[in-house]
Amino acid sequence: MLFAQRAFMRFWYARLSGSAANQMMMVAVAWQMYDLTGSAWDLGLVGLLQFLPALLLTLVTGHVADRYDRGRILALCMVVQAALAAGFVFASAEHWVNREWLLALAVALGTVKAFQMPTSQALAPLLVPPGLLARALAFSSAGMQASIIAGPALGGFIYVAGAHAVYAVCGVLFAVAAALLLGLRYDHAPPPRQPVTLATIFAGVSYIWQRKVVLGAISLDLFAVLLGGATALLPMFARDVLHVGPWGLGLLRGAPAVGALAMSVVLSRWPVMRRVGRVMFGSVAVYGVAILAFALSRDFVLSALALAVSGAADMVSVVIRQSLVQLETPDAMRGRVSAVNSIFIGASNQLGEFESGAVAAWLGPVGSVLFGGIGTLLVVVTWMKLFPALARRESLSEPAKSAPS
Image (tube, rainbow, N blue to C red; front, side, top):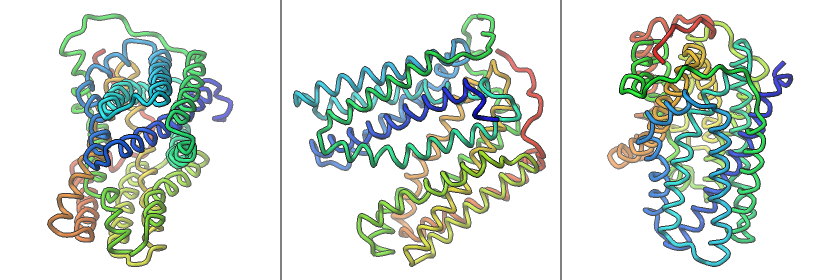
């Protein structure tokens, strides 16, 4: 059983603590920035500066995750974030924080997460038997969704006592995560040290390109989310289409996470083990249909329900895709492959928001989301023809082919 995997559960508690702290920290940063500048541009800049380090460091972070102890790398990431939080406790209490400090913090957090995300993805398969990986990833996703829902709410509540109070709690949570990770023990034979060359650095990109099942799974998620995302337009839907206030916007933003959380709990108990290719393509199609239903709805409850269904369908796709990618990739390559995968995920979210806004300026919010939903369904049909082996995939677990280290 999953709960009997002590190393994985230790990792899960550490990830939950660190994720909750990160969500709370971003609430504090956003509130402080808006209090200081009142600028929507600066709020967007905070998000962009967190994404850029991951983009620039992709090849480096993946290589590091494959050469060094992944548990220690994650522990170091938590220690650095705890130190950043401690510094901002003092700076906020003394009223030293300004716009430049907060932008620098965004860059620092983005740099840390550039190492943290691929390392975390690559570590999970080492902590459970292959037969439990899908269940473990679903359970891990449940914890992440819970932190995404609860973290900002808790951070906003604590912020009443001041930004320094939020940073202090974050520092404690990061320290707890670091302590859990430092005590992590798992069987892992480090790969032989080889000279760092362009071939070893780009091996992750090369492996994904050659392994069509992995390429198809990653690119399907990229284009489906890029086209089908509606998050950036939710304020327009809340005010102009559904005619609800900020409370309605908050519920709409939380609806996909609620659906994803519910589905991740289901998948942790009953993982998808058969016809995984068809189920993955089917879940992306359901995601597209749910987005279309949201675009056409004029009822708030129906709109929230459609977003919840989209979150649940996306979670099915995410768990299958992550399981396939990890099981298809030899351990010596997982860090580099996970780093490239992380960029695909980040790009789909960031570029998806840009695509939604750009099309909305042309077609309006409803037209933009309709365009995205139809585009998602077309991607499903196209990808089934481009990657027939992925569409016909019956099970998650097949022996990974050897690859350069």
